[in-house]
Length: 148
Image (cartoon, rainbow, N blue to C red; front, side, top):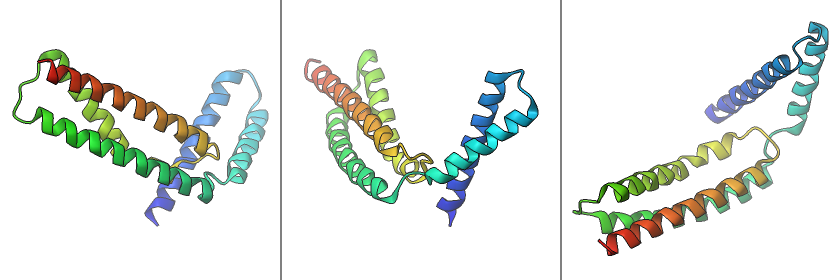
C-alpha cells in the first residue's frame, strides 16, 4: 500500500513539475491553452502506466548483480582500510567510494517507484555509470593502499 501511495505522489509531482515547466517556457499563452496542455500531458502520463512489470523484473535482476558486485568490492576495501590511516587524497577517494556504494544500496526504492515507461534505458545507463565509477574508485583505492 505504501509503495502505491509513494508512486502516486511521485507521479503527481512529475506532472506538477512538468506543468510549471510548460508555464515558464510558454510565458504568454492563455490559461486555457495551458490547462489543455496540462490535461493532455496528464493523460499521456496516465496512459504510459509507468514502468511495465516485465521491465521492472529485468531491472531488479540487473540491480541484484550490481549490488552483489558492489558488496564484494566494499568488503575488499573494508578489509584493506581496516586499522589504516589513509592519506588525504585516498581518504577523499574512500569517501566517494562509500557514497556510491550507499547510492547503489538505496536504488531499489527508486526502481520500484520510477514513474516513466523509459525505465529500462534509464536504469541501464544509471547501472553502467555506477558500475564503472565504483570500479574506478575501487582500483584507485587498491593501487593507493598497496603503493603506500
